[in-house]
Length: 268
Image (cartoon, rainbow, N blue to C red; front, side):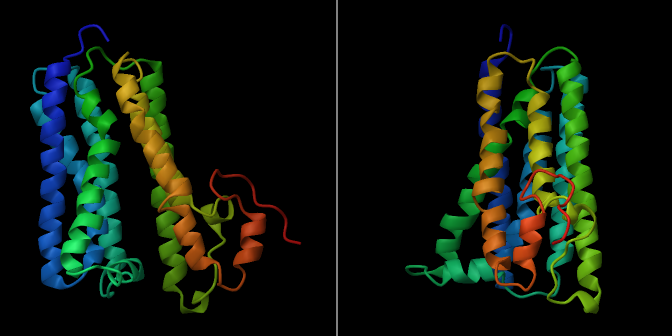
């Protein structure tokens, strides 16, 4: 893109890497003190928020002020809500079985293995996935129609995440539902409304830089990586392997979309 301040953006990449690394190292110190590595899940949303805020400060005098403020606010709202939800959901619980299983294979110190394989890896992913948030800070000109479509898509994603998490929490709070499959509300339209919401949020944020020419080629890595993780990586497949043995899951899977929402099939 003509006029895009590539040198300033490159410097921002370094600042963003430092912000993501700092969040993860602080979280690692807290986890070691508490003896619980599940707290790293809280740092996921906090890491994106830190990158957005640092990028906003570093880009002062660059880009469009309205776009900078908007992308920072959208990222922070998403990240802080997610962090608060995960912290609330995990209160009073022990170690996450996923991390227990992973750390059981540690060749040596469990904590150092967790630092390498969990914290530093997640910090790198935060940096990579946040590319459109960083790039948007340096794009000149106000949002066009595609950018506003991104805001709408972000809002759709927040709706699915927030409402889906609320519905699931309310379902689990009722002792009658212990061991049962959640198949109501948004969960009757998709088996993963929260993951679909994440998908929409990051494609929406990407659309905020789609009028930035060459910067699009860099930023598109973000939603592509996030989509892969959600649909084929550590999101949907891992969770469904955990749920596969639950009574009723096979029938739920047969009648409910695996990711993109659609009306549920009629029960046989």
